[in-house]
Image (cartoon, rainbow, N blue to C red; front, side):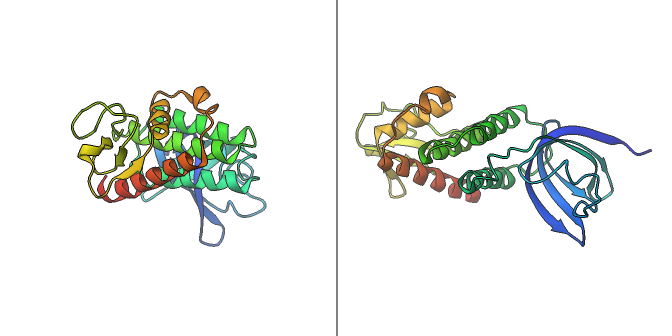
Length: 239
């Protein structure tokens, strides 16, 4: 007897398969990250065609075969049109999708990451964000995502000696586990400023309303982007 599974999920990626099929990578509410094959979905007459596509939030139904899941029904609940219609928003979405695809491999329900993804995409979709807000939106997702995975860096005291952090001579070390003082700094550390400490603390406290109103200087924003990218590369090699 065939068992049908139904859930809701965000379409992170799609790739062509065969002459008319597609493989969708979906972060679902009930099963976490799943890959589902949609047969003949690229044909104009396909009944699935309007219900699922890149960036969509869809309600889907599928069956589990011997080697892969097959999509049997799809209804688009939100097409997030503000993301694909804005190339810069789409670029942020693709970075988010890449992070999820790189670090979530097995199928496992995760309500916290699902909720984080939902609120992040709604922020990205519902306005024409400034470059600063767009970058903060990604950073907010990125750092809270790794926090949920159990890799939250230390931002309240020196990650090496547990000493109090002073406003000056601050460093960030991916290998060292977060922000460290000058006395504990080693070669791979990145010098930062107190703005980065403030931003990261607000991110981990989920204080988006305060964060979104901050006037972040370009220099500090660039620093945040650098340590975010460095942490991503470090986690790819060590997680």
